[in-house]
Length: 206
Image (cartoon, rainbow, N blue to C red; front, side):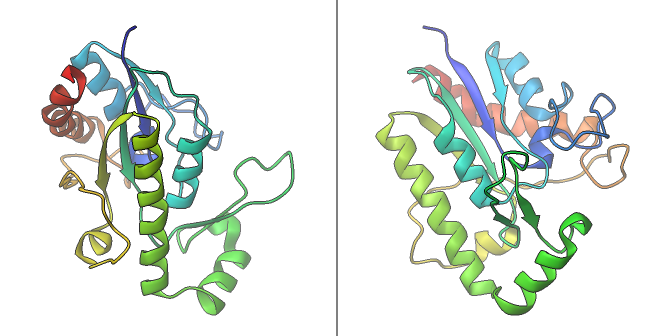
């Protein structure tokens, strides 16, 4: 059975701002110029990019849990920032729900309420590590081999009693910017793919 590379993450893994994405659709098809596709071409492996722009780690963990894994799948998860949060709605038209964060104008009211009344940094960090460790245990139970990395520098520095995951030390260094002037550009996505290529060679040979 052929191996597949399954990638989970947020807008950086999806390729937001790159030239081939439909900017009028929230979480449409990912970019062919994003690092998962570049990495898959280098590894000569099928890629399934399940990243979603604006995803919180809670949302990413749910995407992993609902995915139909096959025996030889290999997984890379590039976890997002801890300050993001999702509030799910029991509404069939709202598959994503509220993406809560100071960066999201579409959910301004729930974001303000969350940060004023509920949020604290320590609580957010601990909750995120619970999601991540739950997913690590789940993938181990499913016998799916994975690489997990953190974008969030605060999470890397936090001494969390809930964490048992050994993360690949990933540093995002911008060589260029995408069309939106915020997200990584094509050269930076090539750099990201090269960094993960060093790690995934062993994963593919297992």
